[in-house]
Length: 446
Image (cartoon, rainbow, N blue to C red; front, side):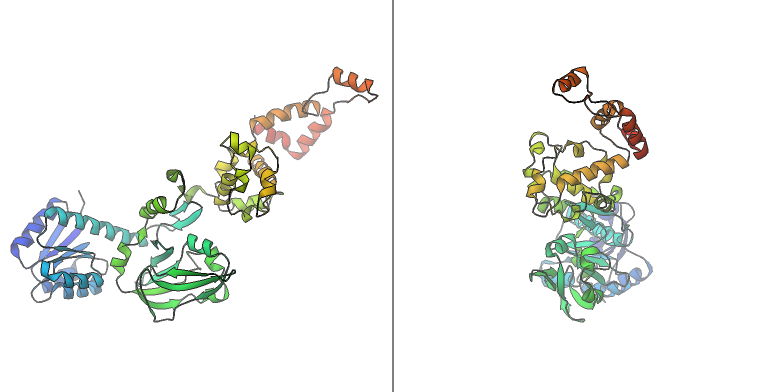
């Protein structure tokens, strides 16, 4: 059952009108009917309909006129046009005015049911822009993209404002590819832009121009003047203060119907952009800690973590990664940058580093990866997680002052070589453990 979505069916043919009403009512819709355009206008003025299904040829007010009037009265209603074979040109005109779809006569009840169901989905998706919380953000392959926005595949986004305009900006992919921006070329206010066509040109520090396309067609209302003096807003807050321009849309419903929104965005990304093991490459951001990378950077050895651009040189040169897939420096750094604090600090893989420095020597960004792993271990220890192997090593240190105890055999060898015997000074080590709090940390790993 569809529920109580409300439909208005408009047709001057009584048989067609009653047939559609009967068919759609069986689908679970609440269906009203009107015999001409003016009667439909009167009903739309007093009732809110999710979908209006209208014939083009109507008495008193035809389908095109009805569509224009309805857009002013109930802009949120989705329109489906019914047309005869000789009226395709008019149907195309209706689509340009914002109709969701058109169906040519004769048609089956299954066809009208399928198109209506899609129209209901469109209506719900469009309405969701006002109800979906901003924190509903997906992190996909390292890119953070709010699911409450509409996305063009060429990496621009649109947000429908309360006044009906569309705020436009560049998504994570665009701004990361562009890099450091030194100039933004905006369109003029009042200029017409078309969906899928270039509306903004961005020049980066390498003098390369990156082109941003408009997600919707319409007239430019204004541009973000704050970006003129501070281009970095695009990088630091692409979905907020880093917006580019506002557009008064011409065909909003038809434009939104072809943009990516909500979970379809994730599905599209999985198909077109994501790398291997696609099903494991995205996650919701609710459990992420965006300050984790700053916490690591504040640790000795972790200062350079933000310079990593995930080229993979570290993993390719790592001898541990060859024999144990749990240890992958590139993946560990990416997880840390994404804010997967709990998963990084409570896992075993950060403790597997052999400290061979092969990764560190080959990093083109100068990231001190071996030192970074030490910083992650320190963060883990401060959070109360210590690998059981480290705790096991700490026991003989606390007991004997060293990992490997000195016995009589060792001291006899030293005596033969003319060396003084080695004495265990466990009491001094124990004091150090107590003063530094290492004893409590070690207990956490046992």
